[in-house]
Length: 126
Image (cartoon, rainbow, N blue to C red; front, top):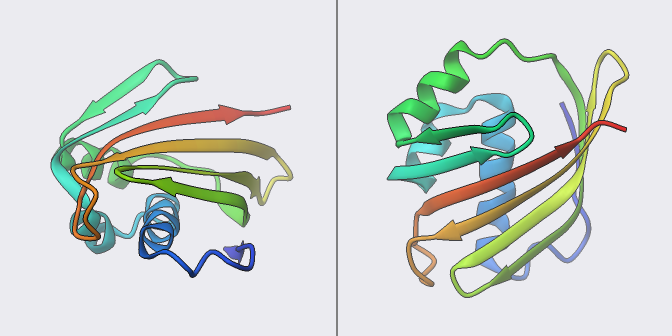
């Protein structure tokens, strides 16, 4: 998967965590997800009306999910403030499908060591 990240995303540690976590979700990198996600993480997949609760449920979903292969992840912006963050951009699948996305994160606290407590994922297919 090709990854395009805007310049200037390396000036805040939380920004890199959000980028790494987003890539880990898309590539199903279990160890990175375990490192950054709180045990009680909640992932809202709003378009699908799904709510995944707990790190083990998240990992199980990712391991058993049938996903279309991703050709490219292009990140437009990563915004962080306190214990909140958001990331948006475009996911291009190998079959040519384009998915605009935005994920809004809530962390357990404002420290760099804070874990991902909640994600709200918005996905649009034009």
